[in-house]
Length: 332
Ligand code: ATP
Ligand code: MG
Image 1 (cartoon, rainbow, N blue to C red):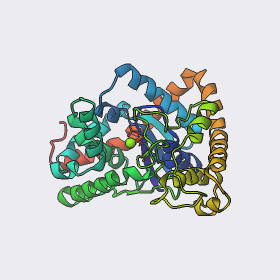
Image 2 (cartoon, rainbow, N blue to C red):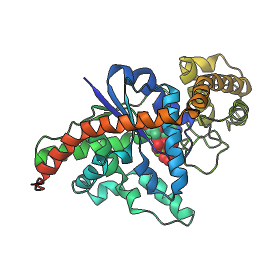
Image 3 (cartoon, rainbow, N blue to C red):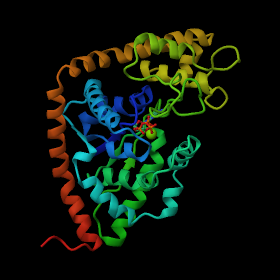
């Protein structure tokens, strides 16, 4: 059976980008058609300036939102990365297979290290080595597919390279995985800056729709989205990124093609209104379920406890095999 792994970082409140680019498909497709693992990757949240209490709170909230979105622990495994030691164990081995140069080439490293420097913060070494830990997340489970948004495909490519290199040098140990980005809304853009990806850790929040935003806030943010001064509505991601972003969001909500949707609008105002309505309706059931789950903290703990046990049992043999293959003496 196909195995799937994907994760989400507790670096901020989950966004519409996270939902359309990743979580929605985990719920609607992946958990039904494959053996799927979904992880709150909390170790990755420590790669940038962080507040311990906030990371803990966001980890719980992310896990709860995954369940609220519809992940069913009877169908898939939901767990927290730091509960399973195998991720960190394998990450070190992969750092011994990767090169400094390939880590420095990662776009996310360039962007996030630049952002840290701009705000006067030092760049953590873990931000550079992040892709080795992400590769460990995936390879430890011998996952075939990694459903992620567009922005993560470079990291999955690196994961493939590391898996192939390890297998060639030390013997067949890992499955070589592939990224499976969604057909639409693979990269939802910031509503205030359509040149930038909507990201949950960004400071400027006016262009970000959070999954737990009130309907009024969602509507306000979408109605104020930056578009352009051209008349009418057309689907041109290069030339009209703001309008294209709205069309893609609406497309992801309605299942209609962005170009076909463009033809039914004469002005950006009505497009914004319909997009806002569609997003509010899309998120309504998720928000209601999240409120229900918040009243039952015991359930979440149970799910995460069982999830970690299942994940550990899957990862352990592969990581042990990697330790032996690379030349480490097994415990006597
Ligand atoms: P951060 O700003 O901390 O990097 P993020 O919003 O990028 O947060 P991640 O935890 O890095 O979220 O990514 C979780 C998943 O959501 C990944 O599969 C990623 O590709 C996807 N994703 C993130 N942002 C977007 C977006 N704007 N559009 C589509 N998919 C996205
Ligand atoms: Mg990200």
